[in-house]
Length: 145
Image 1 (cartoon, rainbow, N blue to C red):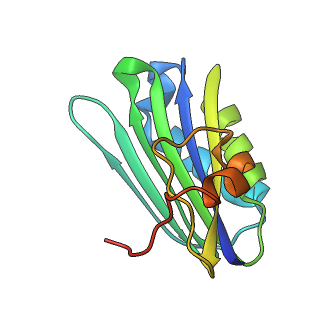
Image 2 (cartoon, rainbow, N blue to C red):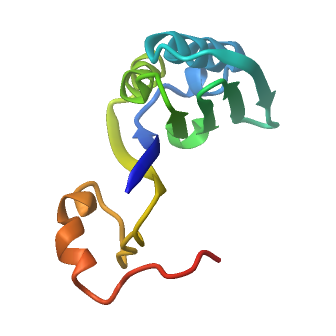
């Protein structure tokens, strides 16, 4: 497969509700993540929901960072997609640090062109370590819907 980008998905729990409900803190966390990931900001949009929650997206020259918060659960979900240069793993680490996550799950996916990519029944942190095993099974993606 020709890797065109790296897509990181972050689930984070046990974060302080006041941080997750503060649009300025979320904006700054994304800006810090962009700097840590050596990325280039094109635009950023941050929206405060009522009664709580924040969604923010940053359009990057490399692609994007998006975050959605649920302060009432101490939870945030983020995805970081970097094409070409940049260090999305460092950007993800900065988000976790700035938003004071006590527990996280980080999944990394290579995005690109080439042979069919295996589609397992469930995706876990260790799925991609089993690509040869899955690829030899009948669970190959032949079309995109």
